[in-house]
Amino acid sequence: MFSQRVGIFIRCKGEKTVTYLAEPYVVVVGVGRSGTTLLMSMLDSNSSIAMLPEIAFERRILVKQIQSIGTVSQMVELLKKDLIFSKGGIDPVSVANSLTERDIKYSPVAFYQHLLWLYAHSRNKRLVGVKDPKSLELLPVLKELFPQTRILHIVRDPRDVFLSRKKAEWSKDRADFLQLLAYRAQYSLGSELGPKLFGRHYLEIQYEALISMPEDVLKRVCEFLEIGFEPQMLDHTRSSHRLVSIDEKQYHGNVYQPVLANNKNKWMGKLTKGQVVGAEYAGRKAMRVYSYENANFRKSLRLRVYLLALGLSLEVANSLYCGLVYWQNCKAVTELSRYNAP
View (cartoon, one colour):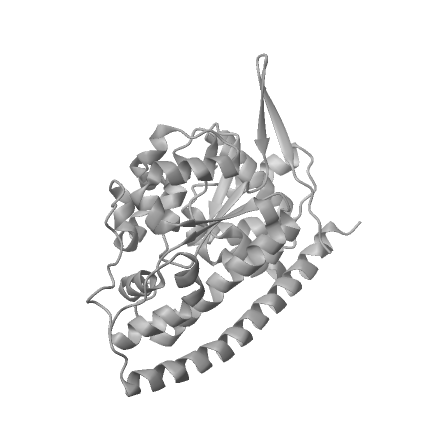
């Protein structure tokens, strides 16, 4: 199995030594539209941690493009053309040059670690974090690459997640079944694999608690991350403007505003009965764990038959999808391990 050493780099300022951790100290995950962007902005407002804009480097580059980044020049050329990566404001040529100057042997993971170090250094922050909701499907790879990483999983009412995904530009045209499968599979992967793989370095928080009691929840998060809570974390808007690009504003508009304590139960009156019971079924584990109340309406025979068929279909699809995810993780670890061979 692949085991990547944690990289530590040290810079001296006169008599003061500043240590920068060259790996993602925390990865923020959650089913899409669960509040990951808000949480990212709040964390970035802390003086200890720099959150990278959402570029999904581990998932999109290290895993999906592993066959195309065998050399540093291939990595640089790929990133120069990558529009999503460009949102991070990081020059891949500078990363490559810095590797050469420090005589660090190239590997895709070493490049990424050095990128993170340079980013933390540029922000004058000791720690660095990343946000990628779909990395819920990448937890085994993250554990192999960065065994000390902390996973912060934010969970939201599945009905509000469903409604929000039906409105967001990137997901509004997807079939209801696929929206429900995403919640069913990703929440299960996170809640089951997270504690097993990361132990005390895995934490779940509830979105509704974060917006209604932000200080209490953030203090708990800071304790988990072993950093001090800072009041400016409650005013995340400055970080939001830096981390969220203009083209993402359509579906991340709320992060430019103060925390909206009433941004919950939006699904009421806006979803059909079929969509409500479907979301409740897909997210039934989260419904139980976080005490979300099921909708109180009479279920007709037709609705019961629909729910039975939906449930059977979701369970089959979830088993197949999770099996595919496990296979992809094993394949990625095997391929990445080639770069760590002596």
